[in-house]
Length: 276
Image 1: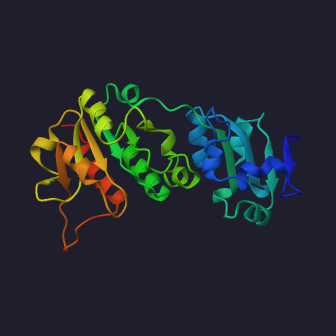
Image 2 (image 1 turned 180 degrees about the vertical axis):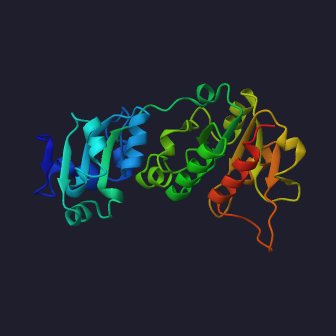
Image 3 (image 1 turned 60 degrees about the vertical axis):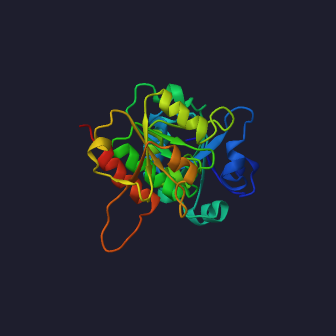
């Protein structure tokens, strides 16, 4: 395949998207247009392709060209491929490649919250969740357990960051998502108002004297529900909890008072994503 270029010089400027740029720099790569992100592993890349994302180039371990990457490369026959042995790729990227393949892809413009959520009945809202691993795990649970979209406040980590997308197993490309606009929909006041205009009741996952059980009959019967999860450690802001229609707790045993945000999200999505 002539388009496959064996890497001899790891300082080649064409490789800077894989090694020389931070994820924030990739995000702004084509400013003011949308930027780039790096998808890692054949499954994640395939799900991104299935969702219509445009590949720019591939970085592949030599042994994977005819291995797990073969189907993807055949599907994208006009896209440049850079290849090297695994040890060289580790030196270039600074991390071991999951299943030996990375793909630089073009981002797409994000939809507005109103247009994204029109007609939906169950959405997850993430407030300032900063850990990409938690973002990825929450997306995977949301996609699997009945959420129709994920909405993020501007303080959240980007779902297209390499680690978040990999942990999600590519479900960031399967479930619709967007950020609340920092200027026109500042969270929580304006963001909450948008949700109310769309007909959603809001459920803050938090501890408190007025918190109802996840199995509360009134909560379970809500036609349209937005499940709101807060940042690691501190949880939801007091102002956000006060603005929500419900404060909801997960009943637990053994004196445990709380769960990691990703685990709490999975439990809440399983119970509240069900249709009564």
